[in-house]
Length: 282
Ligand code: PAF
Image 1 (cartoon, rainbow, N blue to C red):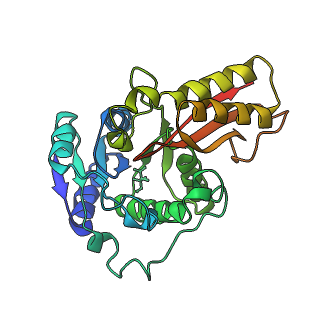
Image 2: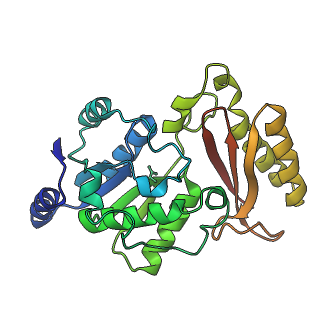
Image 3: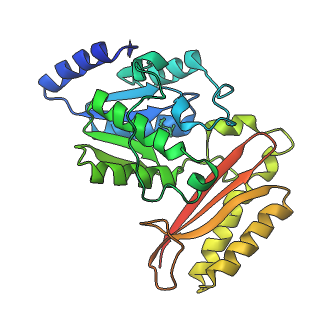
């Protein structure tokens, strides 16, 4: 695996690969890689000739009270995992490489659709930070395909919308949620869970699955179903940020006659905020 810290040298290597007729697959990450990230790399390898992974903990998408400083940085393990997965190129820039003019004056990519609800409501500015850095990374790597996990359903929807609105020549590929045996969605933030909390946090996924099965059985009283779901999670000892039953395409509250529905939930543990979602077609 070749490791690049600078845009210019990565571009040079990618230009050479493209000249040889190779297609480029891209997996953007913030590091602290776990099995779900490696699944994204494998998907990119199935679809493209050369795979680029980026590791950059993007301060622009963290709020002032969020965990940017304590976000786990595990470069040695991450590089070992990527080497074992036969990743071709790792891009690991410094903040000054991505934001050479500083972050205050950085040109931003703002996607007004779908960014003020769900995670956007409790994390103001978060999606602006995500779309800005992803647009920059797309311009640097110029991938044919970029792979994102469905676990961050809203992020995936917002990035798809950005790509469509700005005519970016990249195909966005969605990869399934990778789960622990008890259903907990894999996430770097699971590392913040205490031993006591860990057996209980599967309640988020269990409740999403329960609510999905209620809809499959014919329930359409979505507001009541959301309230009952929140109570289930609260009764397990967690504070709920949101539990929402949405139209899968625009993330607006689901209407009775919607056919494609996604249920999304976010809850707080002592040291983490966990998100998850399930989708269904009716
Ligand atoms: O999903 C993530 O890890 C980040 O939001 C991303 C897409 C790498 C942008 O920083």
